[in-house]
Image 1: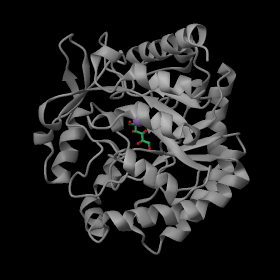
Image 2 (image 1 turned 90 degrees about the vertical axis):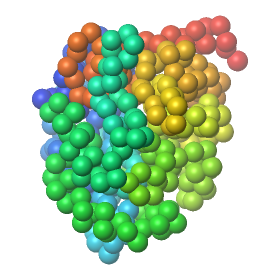
Image 3 (image 1 turned 60 degrees about the vertical axis):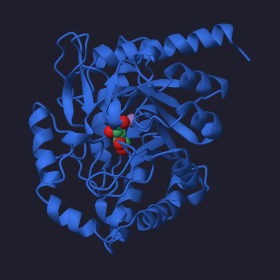
Image 4 (image 1 turned 180 degrees about the horizontal axis):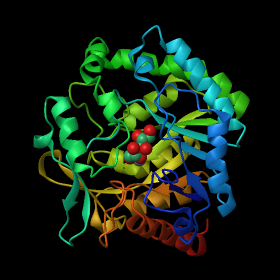
Length: 355
Ligand code: DNO
Ligand code: MN
C-alpha cells in the first residue's frame, strides 16, 4: 500500500507540506482544486500550480479527492451531457500530470453531514459528531447550523454559493428515486469510462456519509449489498471504490473488513477512520486506535494486508487535539497519529505475519 495525506492546498489548509514531509511514510498528497465548482473544467495551468507546490517535496500527486459530480448529472437533466464532456476534459488534463485515481461521490446535494463539528470527548479532545435528533427537517436551517459551527472553514458540499440555491436543488431532486439515481450513476460511468481507459485513470467512488437517507434524499452506497450492486452495475476495472471505513462504519451492521476481503481488487483508495456508536444511531469520530471505536480497525488493516493491497491509503478525519485550530476533521496531529497507527499495524504484519 502507499500512504497518502489529504491536503487542501496552500493558503487553504492549516497544515503545511513541510509538516507533512516530517510524518514518516507519507508518499503522496491527495489533492484537489477546491475553488472549482462541480462541472467546471480543471485547466492545465491551474493543475500546474498545484504540481509546483507538491513536487519539490518529493510527493506524488497520483490521487485526486474529489472531482465532484454536478447535481444535474445526479438528477439526470438534459444539461448532463455537456457537464460530462467537461468531466472528461478534466480527466484528460489530470492524466497529463500522471494522476492515477480520481475519488468522487454520488451523494445528492451534500457531502458528509454532521451535527457537531467540535463535540468534546471524555479526554478533552474534539471530534465530529452525528446526533440523529439534531438533524433538522429543513436543510437550510441545518446548513446555517453547520456553517456557524465550522469556524470559518467551508466544508465540502456546504459552500455558501451552493446553499443559496438549496430550495431549487431540493425541488429538482423530487422526481429522483433511488432507482433513478442508480440509473444516472450508470449513465455517468458508461459515458466517462472510455476516457478513463484512454487516460489510465481509475474512478473510485466514496460511500455515502452517513450511510442512510437524510433530508428525504436517496442515498446509494450505504452497505455491502449496495457495493456489490455498484460493482456489477458497470463491471469495468476502471470503476472501483474509495472504501471509507468511517462512512460505512457509522452503521453498526456494516463489516468493513469483509468488504475489503471480498472486493480488494476493485479498491483503489482506502480511507481508514474509526467511529464509536451510541444509542439510536448517533455516532462520534474517535482516534484511529482499534479499541477506541467500533469499526474494527485492526481487522480492516489486516484484511488489506492479507489481500496484498498495493493501492493508496490515508487516515481519514482526525480529532482536534492539543488545541490545534484546523479545518474540521483535517488537522495535523491526530491524522499524523493515524498514519503511525496504520503503519504500525502494517509493518508488524509485514515482519511477523508474512504469508
Ligand atoms: C469523508 C470524506 C469525504 C470525501 C468525499 C469524496 O469520509 O472522506 O468528504 O472526501 O465524500 O467525494
Ligand atoms: Mn472518507
